[in-house]
Image (cartoon, rainbow, N blue to C red; front, side, top):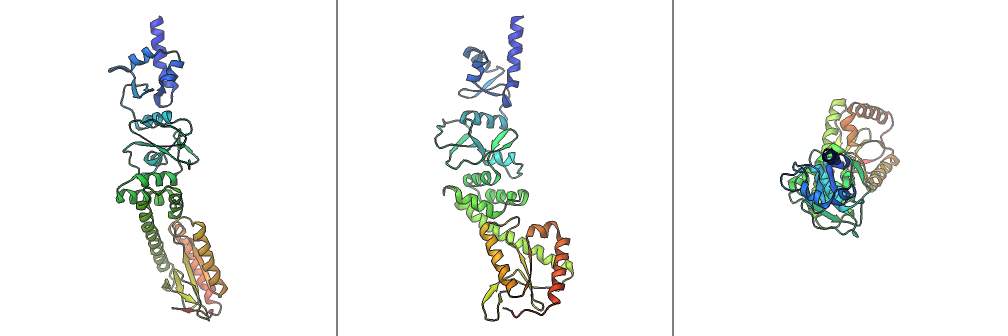
Amino acid sequence: MTANRALLDLDAIPAMFSHNVATAADLITLGLSGHTIEERCRDGGPWRRLQSGIVLLGDSPPSRAQRIQAALTVAGPSAVVTGVDALALHGMSGARLAGPVHVLVSPRRHSRLVDGVFFDRTSTMPVAQLRAGFPVAPLPRATIDTCRRATSAEHVRALLNSVVREARISPSTLREELSRATSRGTALPRRILAELDDGVRSLGQGWAKRLVHRAGLPPPRWRVPITSETGAHLATPDAWWNDIGLAWEVDSYAFDLSPSDYAAALRRTTQLTAAGIVVVHTPPSQLRDNPVEVADLLRAAHTQAAARPRPPVEAA
């Protein structure tokens, strides 16, 4: 009876711990002896050691989630998961679950060497977000942390494109996150982010040209510098209807603007409006998601511009 009860108690222990991962100290606190733990972790036993002092309460190879739990257990309560595991926990399809678990820890935290774990000591700890029960770095930080450790340009490009397209994180937000990182490993993601900016700009202009055609509007001129009566440069709108003085500005970034991007866009719009030009301002995400609404807005603006005298401006 006593032996059966002891066995029952031991079998119930895994359910007490997240992902069946426990420290030896926790097991001893429950009343197990060091000898019992050692016996159960021997070859053929029901448990196995993941690291010194960390026990997997099962006999199967550890899953990725159990490896993450073990890394966090070693790192301490303030640790945060980042890198590819954080990307996967955020639902990103471009995450490749290969290599070590990447964990952020305080610079004051002493981290011992652990197989399959990279402890990244940082003075800029992010505010963790809970994903599947794990404290995880926000998506922009996890993306940059992953890219800084990547060696393949194709991998970095795929990751950045995935985050921008799937999660709608703007290139400007990723650039700001990159600027807060240490310089090590930033050259490759910085270069590919610049390429991505150009690609997003081209993508938005492609949507714009197709929409003008579908809206039944006369074709505008594209990227034409506009000057005032005195010859002062006002702006270079994305689209320009010269006969009526209508300008269309399509933001350079697909999903949002950084403060500097917004200030520049506002300055261009103000200068054009002060010169009497009708200006339509559209983010590319609206072009993509609500083309019918944008087409209606453009037609209305075209009618408004045609109904008043053309402003005294020149197009190069």
